[in-house]
Amino acid sequence: MQEHSKFKQQVKAIYRLMAGLFGLFIVAAIGILFLLSNPDWTRKKAPETEQEYVAIPEEDDFDKIENGVHVRTGLIEADGLMTVVNNCTNCHSAKLVTQNRMNEERWIATIRWMQETQNLWDLGGNEEIIVNYLVTNYPPKNKGRREILSDIEWYDLKD
Ligand code: HEC
Image (cartoon, rainbow, N blue to C red; front, side, top):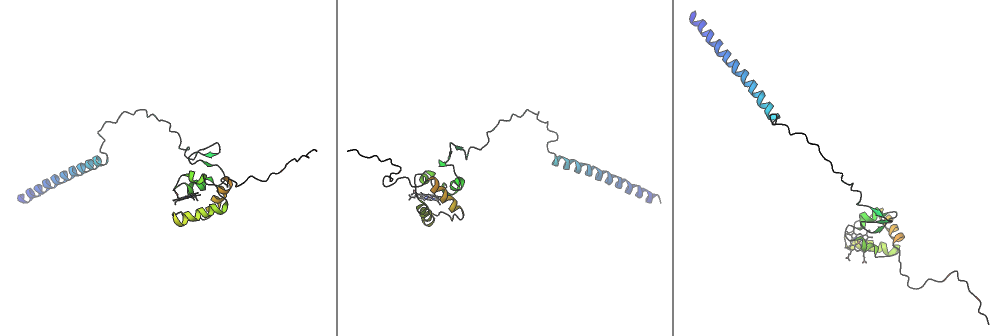
């Protein structure tokens, strides 16, 4: 019988030891998890410095219009300007557009030529807007001959 209770005590001791170890293990595991999720909890916090903010001017100059001219491209400000800017200044300078003055028929022919040979995309509904803009603001300038005089005050030659 004594043998038996001694054995019982030993089992109890081992059991307590195991329980203690298990407890320690849990505490260590929680500590490790805590460190993993807050790696810098021991680090000193950097003193908070006053952050100075420099005012950056807003980027609204890109499509600036000055004196009725779209500064970036030199195109005249009018209805359809941005449609022209977005479709006609990607491949070549807007100068190529503005130095050409044409009537509607020839502007359309130029667009067709670019579409057929230069990979210009289908302009869809924008074509009308673009052609209107071009014809209104960049019509043919050079006239072949002097315009017919009008409003002339004729005077009678005296004998
Ligand atoms: C996909 C590219 C592309 C786009 C977009 C484009 N063009 Fe062109 N365009 C060209 C090329 C390439 C030429 C020939 C350039 C050269 O000769 O140096 C040209 C030439 C021109 C010329 C000169 C034609 C000539 O007879 O000399 C005019 C005017 C012109 N384009 C107007 C326009 C207009 C208006 C638009 C908007 C609808 C436009 N382009 C959009 C590619 C394009």
